[in-house]
Amino acid sequence: MTWTKRAVFPALAAFALACSSSSSPSTPAPNVDAGPSNLTYDFSALRNAMFGGTFKTDGVVVQHEGRIVFEQYANGYTADKRHITYSVSKSIGGTLVGIAVGEGLMKRADSICTYVPAPEGADPTFCETTIDDLLHMSSGLAWNESYDDPATSSVLPMLYGDEADMVVFAAKQKRDAKAGTRWQYSSGDSNLLAGALRKALGGKDVRAWAKEKLFDPAGMSSVVFESDRAGNLVFSSSCFLTPRDLAKLAQVYLDRGIASGKQVVPADWITYALTPAPAAATPTPRTGPNQGGGSYGGQVWLNAAKPDAPAETWAYPKMPVDTYSFEGHWGQKAFIVPSRKLVVVRVGNDRAPEFDSNQLVEPAVAAVDAAITAANVNGGTR
Amino acid sequence: MKNVAKLILVVASIVALSGRARAKPAGLLEVLTGFSAKETCSCAFVVEQTDDYCKDFGTIEGYDVTVEIDRTAKTVTSQVVGTKRTARASEGTGCVLDPLP
Image 1: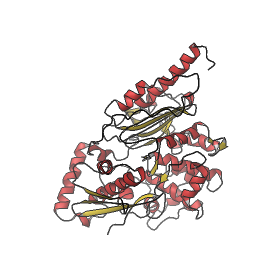
Image 2: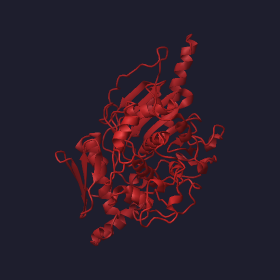
Image 3: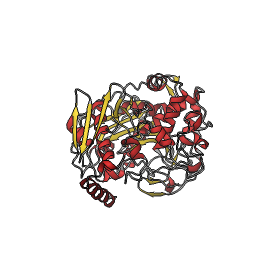
Image 4: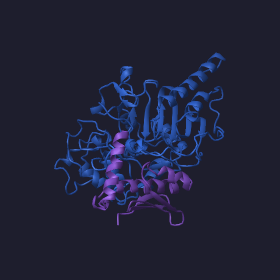
């Protein structure tokens, strides 16, 4: 499998203005919780990597064992200010689909046409695509996620052209692969899921349902999910929330779907989301920094296609193999590292060069490992 | 990538100067102003950043895009060589682009 990873607007980014706002860090916010009582963390390396270089980091939140142990903001952002997430929205939307599947409102094996009727002009085989295929970015529908040329791009006219209904736009794409056989990153696939969920809810307000089922139980009070003019949530790229709230969603994944003692997301859906798509299950080498390698599950990025995959096939060689992530354009990241009980969220405004996520997670893991080692040396019980 | 961007800029300039920009639905100028209006709107009314920050966020190098943020009406209008797009914000639901006129 080969893809240009986490690409949203790379071409426009190539000639985007350098952000004029300073990336100098604000006064570090006090930690909400100092962490487990017998651990002392040193995040100076992480702070220097994220706020001392050329990348435009707007905020970082690190949670260890469910507690915020590092938090810092810059460029006018604070703990209470929402941030754009771009394609992190896909993972949030996918989670909502997972809840709907768990409640029996949808089935992964269903044809997309169970929910989204083939519009006029759709490929005759449109209905062969299933919800499962869409979750796996394997619809087989033609899609150009490139941002080089509006004349050939699929995503640019969908998001910024004059398309009133992004679901219909995605549904009109011609088939160029058999459903389920080819992995291809597609914002169209994600927005088809948004249309399917909306129909599955049978007229309920999707935002209100999402608030009731996920955002409120998880304590994510800042979420604003934008829609197209037809009222479909834009699963591909338009969810806004604070970094703390993104960390809360990541924690729900780390805790196998549980938030505040309640099973908010089905545990078997978490397993599904973290299992490579069949068309992305073969380990393949990276083709460059932040390019290729890794795998993709149910709207979630996976560092490796399997636990024993060779390191040269990991998306991020400096992260633990079990790492997975929600990722969006211009540096929006949420990494979950189960082996360390660690969540690392970073938001930014990276235009060019591209932010290297290894620089985020590697020092965070090192700080946690050092804290645990020190606690053990000092006679702790960890 | 930079070469591609330069090519797009040149093509856009030629199209704009020839007065044919509006004859190409979902073309570059519509996308540019659509991006600028929508993302600046979200920045201003969902993220609640400052006008200066948001205008910078929604600007693309190489294009003289005029961006107007109306805090009262909760709209953002972006314009470049005759192509104008407006996005408007609603409480709790964020920003949506208006249809092209």
